[in-house]
Length: 196
Image (cartoon, rainbow, N blue to C red; front, side):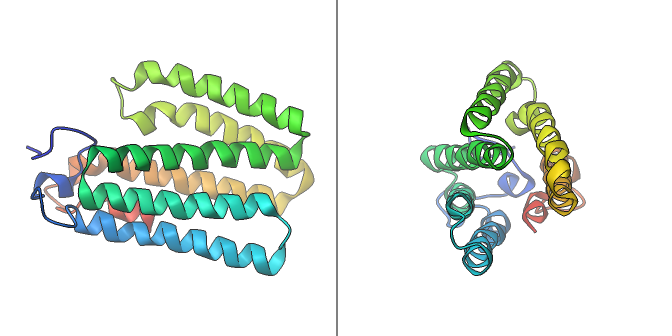
C-alpha cells in the first residue's frame, strides 16, 4: 500500500517514506538522463543548425520536463506533480506543432495541432479507466505516425529517427504500465529504466 494518497504509484512508491528526500531515489536520479538529452539537444542545435530556434525551444522544454519529473519523484508533492504533467504536455504539444511546421505552413501546423488537441480532449474520458499516459497514447501514436509518414517524403533518415523515437516512447510507456506488476522481481520497478 502506498503511503501517498495522490498521484501515480510505482514500485518505489510502495516502500517510500514521506518527508525523506528524495522520496523515490531511483526515479528521481534517472530523470537526469532527460535533462542531459535536453542539454545535448542545445549543443547539437548550436553546432549544426544555430538558427533553428524551434529546436532550442524544444531542448529547453525537454530540460524543464526532466526537472519537473525529478521534482515529482523527489518530493511526491501535488504541486510538483502538476509541474511535471504540465511541462510534459507543453513539450508534447510544442513537439507536435514544431514538427508539423517543418512539414507544412503555419496554418497547416496550427490545424494539425488543433486536431491533436481535440484527440487529447477525447482521451480525457478514459483517464479514470486507464493511466493518463496510456489513455492519450492512441492520439500520440496517430499524430506521430502521420508526421513520420509525411517526413518520409522529405527525408528517409529523419523519418527513421522519428520512428525510432516513437518506438522508444512506446517502450517507456510499456515500462511505466507494467511497473507495479514487477515489484516483487524488481523492487525499484522499471519506471527509471524508461528514462535510460
